Length: 393
Ligand code: AMP
Image (cartoon, rainbow, N blue to C red; front, side, top):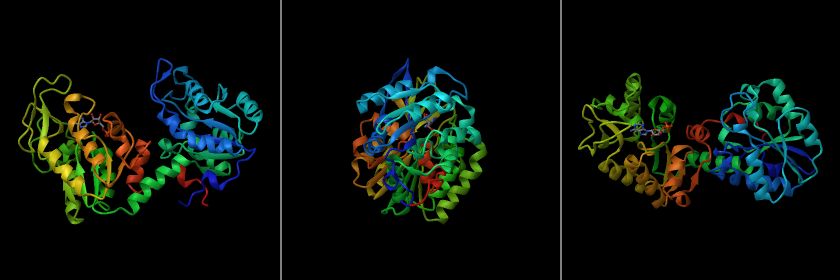
C-alpha cells in the first residue's frame, strides 16, 4: 500500500486524533455487539505502546446534528476501558473548552474519548471551522474508520488536510484484502450480487463486468433482469424504470464474455408480510398474485457449482429476504458454499457480512469487510476519499 500507516509516523508524546468507527448497536444503554470496538484494538494498542496521547473520535447512529444522549459514545468508552484495562477520559463535546483542556492534560499512554461527532451538523457538512476545531486538539491525525471511509466528512476528510496523517491497521487490512484481491484475482473470478435494488447497484454491476468471469445475481434485483428477459414476475419487486438498464447490462455481459447467472427458479409467497402459501417455482417465471422471496432450489445448485469452480469470490447482498427464516435458505447456502471453497473469499460489509456471521461461517471466509458502503466502492475499484486524502509514504 502506498499510503502512510501508523508504522510510518512518529507518535511518541504526540497528541494523536484517531477517527474510529464505534457505531455499535446499543439497546437501552447496553452495547449488543462490540465487534467494531474489538476490531480497533490492534491500532489503539499500537499507538499507546508507542507513547501516543490518544484522542479518540467517532460517530454513532443518526442524531441529525443535535445532542441526543441516546446516541452518546459513553458506553463505548466504558467498554474500551474494560478491554484496555485502563481509565478512559471522556469529553461531553467533541470540540470546545472541555475537550481542549482534557486533550492538553494527557500524558503518553493516556486515552481521551470525545462525544459523538454527529451531535454537530458541521461534521457531515465537512465545515471548515469545525475541521479546524477538531484539528486544534491534536498534533497528528490517524484514520481507521473504514466504515465511513467513503464519506467526505470533517472527521474523515477535512481534518486530514490540516494535520500530519496516516491510516490505522484496520483500514490497511481492508485495503490490502479487498483492493489487492480485486486488482489481481486468481481466476475464475466470480462476483455475487444480491439485495433489494438494481438502481443501487448499477455502477457495481457495470464495473464488475470488466473484472469477473462469472457474475451471479440474486435477491430482488434479479427480478428486474428477468423482466428485461420477458419473464413474468408477478407481484415481485421489479423496478420498471430500470428494465432498460438491466437489458443494457445483459448485453454488456455478452459483449465482455462474462457469464451472467440469473435465478432459474424461485421461492415465492402470496404475501410479503404474512405469507400463508410458500412454494418453489418450476421455472424463472413467477405467477400473478405471488412474489419472489428467495432463490429456488435449482438456482442454489447452479450458483454453488459456479462458486465451487472459482478461485476468487466476492459477495455483496443477500439472495432473498433472509431476515425471515422461511426465505433465508438461498443466502445461507451461498454463505455455506463460500465457507467450503478453498478460493479466496471476500464478503462485503452490511447484510451479507451479517448473514455469514449469523449462519456460523465467518471463520471460513478469507475476509469479511467491516464496512458496507466502503467495501462496495472498493469492489467497484474506486478510491475512497478518506484514504485518498492521506499522505503517500
Ligand atoms: P441491500 O441493502 O440492497 O443489500 O438489500 C438488502 C435487502 O434486500 C434485505 O433487507 C433483503 O430482505 C432484501 N431482499 C432480498 N431479496 C429480496 C426479495 N426477493 N424481495 C424483497 N426484498 C429482498
